[in-house]
Length: 235
Image: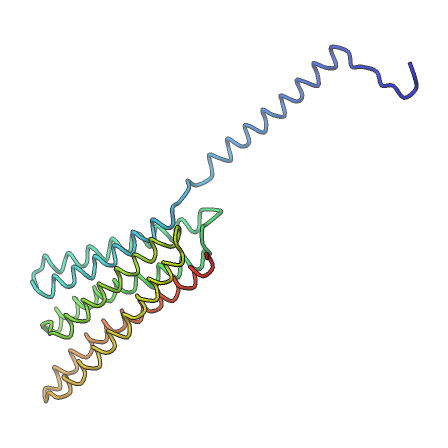
């Protein structure tokens, strides 16, 4: 046998190597199993964001219904819808702190949910202040809430397109941003009509309500801008 030749392992050595190999494989498998057990489940953030948009839209729809009915049940429906929207935001926030990977930047997901939730908050605040101030919804308030419902629906469409068609998401986001301009036009017209009145108390009351819905439109504008920027990253 030459000096370079290596001796073949005997049967005992071969079996020892084989046992060692299987022992290492078993340890890796056990480690992976434990790791899998502590990892949070996969989270569909796109579905959660779209669900949140639907809840916000539903809050505005309930606000419109309350404008017409002015019943305690209708007011409760607004509060319930806003609460359900909050629950989705809380779930998104919790998942962002648990999962290792997200389909979008964590900050983008967080900011989008927070800004959109403000729209529902303004809807709920409008009900509470109209009850407190004993103010009826006029044509301007009706028009503003209709515009907000349409804008929120477009936001929901945009979020639905983010995963599969980011270009279409951006187009929807651009349309949603136009809601702010439309609501602002109605807001200024409402103020013009309001200040033609000599009833100072009524002016102060209604101006605050107009401002709530105008602020909600500002939030939708921010949401549209966020979606447009997110979609640009995905294209």
